[in-house]
Image (tube, rainbow, N blue to C red; front, side, top):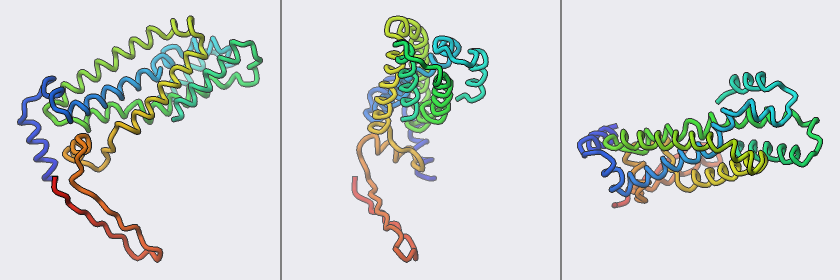
Length: 237
């Protein structure tokens, strides 16, 4: 707790701003991660799917009226996202090639519903949560403002071009493009985003800088289950 308080106090004393954000290698890496998360959040196509829900179901020829489908999606609201969009793309591929899809007319609404639920549990809130975790107080404001503006610019762009994509590429290719972006986004999170749970700002900043001053060795509970010990070695920086 003392360490966290000192870290917060030190970060507030330093002058913040865009210059500090970009000149410091650690905050620059954190900023790159934040923008990457916002980019993959919006390029997953979530807002296009939400804003054009009615049109998607009309195009799919779903047996459920589009108005009813929108209500269902509204109630359900906010690696599975990619699966859902892939399945939705496959459905439109079959439909566009004149296959009989009457037996699977439920696929669009189920795919969209699961997509939105999973988005709400993962890529929906996590980029915004990370804004509060990755940055010291002196640059948190400017980093959050730029990341939020970047997010909504991308949201506008994706929503704007969605109809052009479906017209020129077809619904199947459009959703497969979003599928590919979701897969790349998953790799980005796995490779770039640090684990922040249970860590203070100093520990997160050390991980972003590539320095690890503490190496933890956990002695796993013995077969008889008597006790577990935790040994921490402090290595010089």
